Structures are given as structure tokens and as C-alpha cells.
Amino acid sequence: MKKKLIEASKFLSYVLRHQPEAIGLTLDAEGWADIDALIAGATSAGRELDLALIQQIVSTNDKKRFTLSADNSRIRAVQGHSTDTVAIQHIAKVPPALLYHGTATRNLDSILAEGLRPGQRHHVHLSEDTTTATTVGQRYGSPIVLTVDALRMHHQGYTFFQADNGVWLTDRVPREFVERSAMKG
Image (cartoon, rainbow, N blue to C red; front, side, top):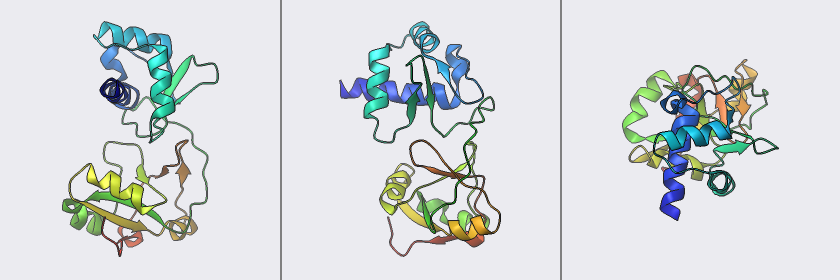
């Protein structure tokens, strides 16, 4: 059952964050998809998906990647979109003094030279703790944790948002606000 949950969660991430058109799904500007259309599209693509499985993924996902509408008729990924059709309107917030970014050591030189950029995503993703940042960095290789002087950025006019799952988002982080954390991974 755990393998089924993981596979279904990865499938949801793929269609709700990156390629909804792969199953004929349409997301609105806030990233919401109709659950019946999601299930129908998944079925036509040979994927086993139903409301109970979707609800289980949403409630048990440790990263809280997805959220359901109050009436359980719609679902969306809370952040990490690369599709141009989604532009979730987050409310700007004042960040904590420091935030953290996990990456692989192979990316360190370019980040220290150029800063953090969103790449294929809409925003740079930051966390409030080094443990989460380390976990993120491990997905890409040998991890390194970077410290971002978020409050100083905010005071200089950069905007921060916080997604429903607690991940902090910003358009970019210039190099002068990034440094290698004292602790490694």
C-alpha cells in the first residue's frame, strides 16, 4: 500500500505541478483541478486513482504538497508549479530573519556566484529549518545547506510568500544574501 501511495503522490505532483495536459486536465490560475476530471484523466492514462486514495495522499503527505477544497471537489499542489497557466496569488509576508535552502554541493559555486534562481519553477523555495533544507538537498546529491538573510532582503524590497505547507517562496535570492551555513547538511 505504501508503494501505491508514493506512486500516486508522484503522479499527482507531475500533473498538478508540471504537466496537467498530459492527462487532458485543466488547472485554473490558482492551480485548482476538478477531482472528477483528475480521476477521469488518470483512468484514461492507465492510472488507478479515486477520491479515497487522493484524500489519503493529501492527509498523509509529510510535505503537505496538496490541499483539497472545503467540499472535496477540487485539489491543487500548494507550490512548485512549472506550468505557465498557474499563478497562485500568495499573500506577501514578512519572513523570519534567516531562511535556509538545501541543494547539492555541485551547485554551490554557481549559487555563490549568481544567487538562487527558481529554475523551472515560479519561485525559489526556502525553509525555516536546516533539517528540512538538508532533506531537500539530499534529493539532488551530496547536500549542502545555505543560509539566506531573508529579513534583510525584505527590508531591501524583496517580497516573500509562505505556501500553505509552510515553504517560503521568493522570486530570486541575489548572491549577497546567500552564504554557506556553518553546519554542513
